[in-house]
Image (tube, rainbow, N blue to C red; front, side, top):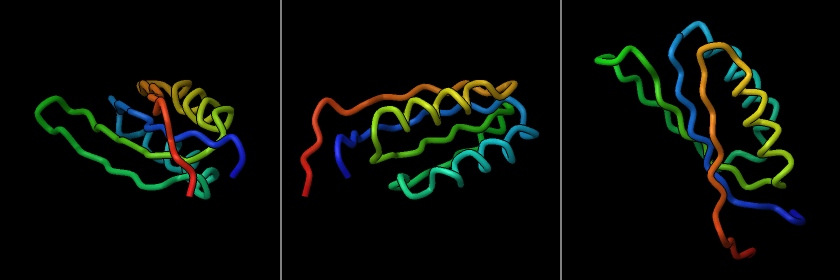
Amino acid sequence: MDDCRIAILAIVVEDTESVDKINEILHRYGEYIIGRMGLPYCKREISLISVAFDAPASVISAVSGKIGMIDNVTCKAVFAKTGKEN
């Protein structure tokens, strides 16, 4: 993969009704996903999701933007400073 970056999306879901929309977007970009983890935090009635990507920066930004536009969802991308290719 040329010009690919390693990044993690941090997603905070404040309404479980939004989960289907998030999963739909992530499914479309599944070829770039290294792994994901979701944690329900019942005490605060939110869910926390982290998704690791190996993708062009433009793809990661697009996914982050699309997810961030969903009501009651916050999404931020954190890019690795370096990433060695195999």
